[in-house]
Amino acid sequence: MQFDHIGIVTTEKHADEIYVAATKVWVTDFRVHPFRIEWLRFEPDSPVTGPVRHLPHVAYRVDNIREAARGLNVLLEPFDAGLAVVGFYETADGGVIELMEYAPQESLEGGAWDRRGNGE
Image (tube, rainbow, N blue to C red; front, side, top):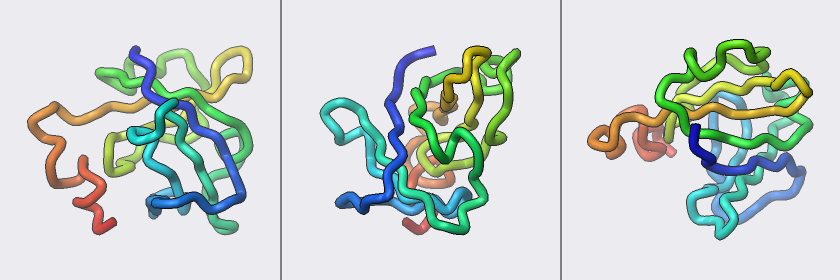
């Protein structure tokens, strides 16, 4: 696992938010934030509930989500978020983590792995 970013839930709009249709959430691009912070603003009708919707999370890059998630409580099954396939999990002590499986480097431009490929 490699640290990727920290996600913080907010109710305030931020500049350059990106809409993730699968979860009905607006997110900022943590890749351009100097401290790798991602702000998340959920739509009222977002299907996301529980800890993912209310608590901050720490995200890690992994080679294989299924393997890295063994023994963790599933909060949100893996889905294609555009930049990577991501899943949300709860640790034994109640922490929320996001596991991110990026496409191979040569596949990052275009297609489902690129936010632009999702019509954003």
